[in-house]
Image (cartoon, rainbow, N blue to C red; front, side, top):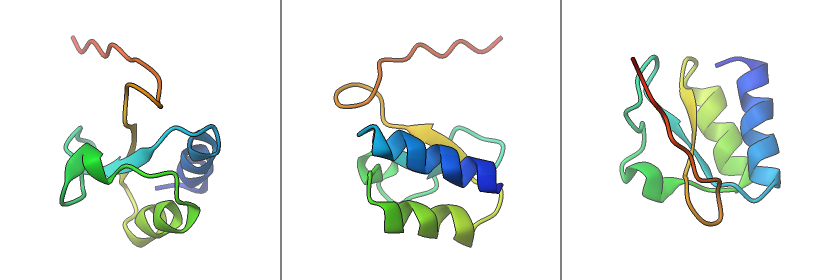
Length: 73
């Protein structure tokens, strides 16, 4: 995790897009309930991304978040 990751997570949350952490260098949610734990709560987001350096940032897609197509090669 970098300060930039935390800032970006908080910026997404401010837009109303729920975010959650994923395991470092993976697309596997790092919370008990995965994307269902996504939140816009500033305190929870700050806790996640300061407690565990290296978490990846994920946005819960679909309403209210954006629709996304992620293609890996």
